[in-house]
Amino acid sequence: GDVRLKLPLFADQSKEVARLRGEHGRMVAQSEELHALVQKSEESLQAATERALKAVRTEQILEKHAREMAHQLGLLIEARAPGASGAVTATALAEQNEALR
Image (cartoon, rainbow, N blue to C red; front, top):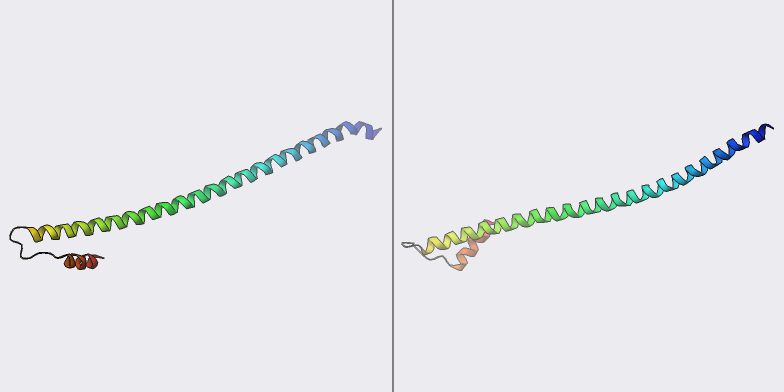
């Protein structure tokens, strides 16, 4: 008689175990999806960081080039100014450009 009284309790426990197993499966799947999203986000962040660093390097190169060009333009203007002592040659500009590097 004792076993018959406990059968509904066992049935309820069995249902609860099945429900928990299902919930566990859903949580594992969700965890895997979240892990994949985190991985993609990390990869995107890494790629964005690399692009940002490349952009900074490019900006630095362009700024240096602009400074060099401004310096050369100044030399040309000085050479062509009234009363200038002599002409600036292309060779002299190239040498000055190399010296700036």
